[in-house]
Length: 382
Image 1: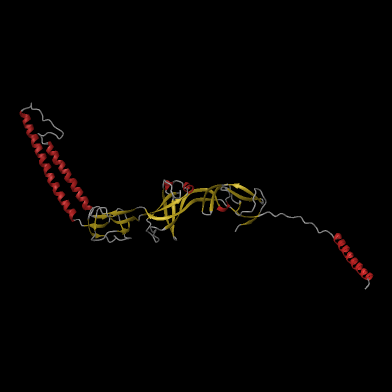
Image 2: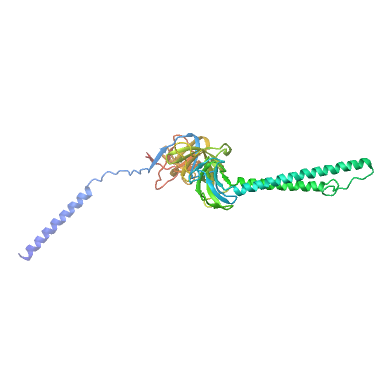
């Protein structure tokens, strides 16, 4: 192919490409524009719940360990050999107030009582003799005075007149008083050979057995009472402040396992717990061992205390409280900030006494951006 023919072929190809480009450009330029749509801004979605007013008793809850009202070690007060113990003198044994738990050999103390009684008898005889001698001296003085009226009466010293034998009488009376005191002491020591229970209860531990010789002050057992159980419950200051009329002993319900017992709030200790900075209230449960579900010492108990009667309140989820005393409510598809008054918070709930009304839609979710008065869409919280 000649140069001219090749040049013609190139020109034809370039022409075809140019025509295609021109046609495509015209098609793009002449095509109709698509219809424009307005962009719709959707309001954020929030979860809400409807709240309702209530009335009734507000409770304070806590927990603690069950313990006895009284617990004490008992010890021997005199020395002696153990000769007898009660059948109940075993760990866990029950006893009544005044029951004899243990007896020591009383022989030495019975002899001491007998000797003291004999001494008292002797001293009483000496007092009788001293009184008779004093009376005889007075009678003789009276007869002498009647014969010689000018005789002066004998002068008396600190112990009385020697003429009337008053010092001898006082000495005999003092000796009798000392002997009677020794007799009382001997009888007391004899009584102390029988160790009795100071209250009704049970034995936690014992440390004495028949045949053992005890020394004064030696602990023989640890006892605790069973007529009343106590539970020490720590409360925050604001929880303790809720409790009205402590003098009326507010009712308390004590739950151990699946059983619930009735008790009452006995007292609030005056000092804060130094470790937790909380108040400690004492719950008492009468007769904890009676019934099908005894309240065993050492058990862990949950306690609910009647704090005060409130005419109107609303209980809301604690997570709905914002910034300490604020909630968000939805009205007419707009979110509003609303201050509230909180009586107390317990567990996952807060008790509100002002700021909310029945039917209010309370926001319980947290959108990314929140402003007072912004538009929102609502869904019911599950």
